[in-house]
Length: 376
Image (cartoon, rainbow, N blue to C red; front, side):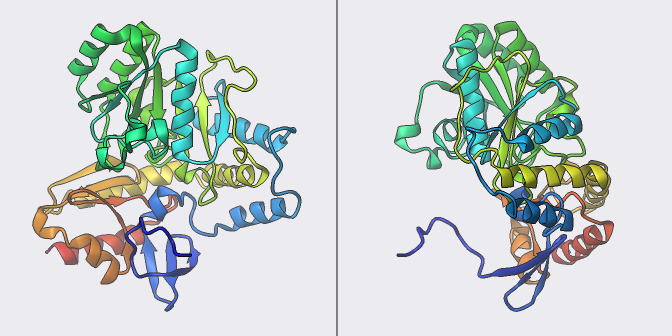
């Protein structure tokens, strides 16, 4: 049997990792500023994280949601505390797509409606509903296509208001990333998120804050949407939540009243997943990583804006997009193969930085030196 060939691969095998560095099979050291799609939030093989998982695995690795799992309660309490949403409710799943899928389903159960507003440039996942609200027709299979999704221009308050005026009684939910990741590190404006909140209140629609990539402290705030000063009804999260262990969740406002069987999952919230997620929050809190993300992120953004060759620098905290002109399209590849620095990309020519939240200034300077050499 062969692997189903859907991933374009770099010819690199990672065999060891620590902090913000990884090593390949030839012992070449790399600086990791991508964290495997924003997943590594507290650094590779963090000692507390490894200990937490190892200790839990020696006790019990898995049992289903048919029994009490105290770790889930501990995780909900800690997440409420760190995120500032103490009165919210937590439902645990396995991936960002699954989180968004369940959030959309929950919204439809809540108000009995079908239509969802999503935005140009959006990426919400690859499962049935999640991919239907993703703005990439190439990955939407015919079976995923639906007339229930309305795509509107990102950050266009007029279009949003007009759509609610004409179809408000049919709209179940609005789903939006606080900062679009795959869409090129584009931030929703404060007034736009506030407008979503007010219209959802007026028409009894559900405001879903997709925080899968832009959440979990990456921007210096726990959820990037918090910048707007208003609360969403449901926050979805994954990526950095488990520092590499598959765990995700949705944080649900108190107005939603659950009933048995409404949502469900086999692996969501298992013992190991909760241990991983608790370890992440404990390290974030102890080491003040949201503050570090803000400070190192501000430093990188300030320095990157000094390069006249860069078209635009976007983002917040350690979620940064560097838009380059076409003649510098080679920079990302040369960062990896010439300077041994992992970064991400968004089409056509945006370099994405999504490093661990404990990135040091020395690591930031290492990147800036390499970047400077390549763009001159």
